[in-house]
Length: 357
Image (cartoon, rainbow, N blue to C red):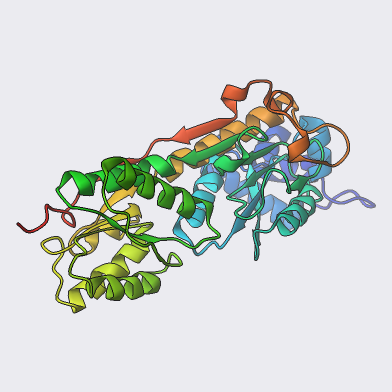
């Protein structure tokens, strides 16, 4: 079957070739799940044979939506970023949306703002920003009327934000070690340009202070197992170190190796706690006590918050404005709705124990 001369293949052409309704072709083109696999295969084959490509502009005019979400992330090699991105993609797929991702090489305000502008020119309905890092609500400029949600608590009061309870997780990890009887807890922190790393370090420090425990010098890593190994070699040389809280599981894995090579047994000589609960955590030796983040729930809530704005037609006022110029009431009408904190859980395994007598 050939398309009508003078125009490209249409939705109706695909429907006729596949022997289905135009509504079914539309559902397949939008990636919706309520189509039988055999029917979807037939429609996709008809699209390929005719060279049909969905007209996103026409779809937006008809349905009021491009069914596409833009997303900005930084350093996808990091566990938190990659798992949050994966969770957003899955949650968007469940809602019949696709995701267009830009992985910026720098988290500065100018770079993130430019990425948001690029995405807004690619027919998106809204934008998810995965941790803007060094960008702030006072310096980040976004396209007008663009629905936005941020996985960064620093944007509370400017845009809806969803994130894990970073401080609560660090407090529970530190308090767990203190409750076991350790005099103090050393900390291997994430990099200084990471907001989650700083929140975890601040909560660790505050927990020690509230308990009247000494606050050791922070050992800074870069989230990698290698930096955890280097930190572990330094800490293993100090016989007073009996407990370490690492800001993520990869650094904890490197620390475990360094302690083993130095002859410091875990948990008999040194107890170790991580953060994230990566799949590898329970298979390390000993299995790692860690703070569990529910990345799937974070992704679902980010997409839910964004689509609430899309469906309500909410966004910034006309003209390109700084987030600092938008009050909480203007942003959503309800300050209580601006920030969702997803609870975390301390998963206790065999890497922690009371100190030697």
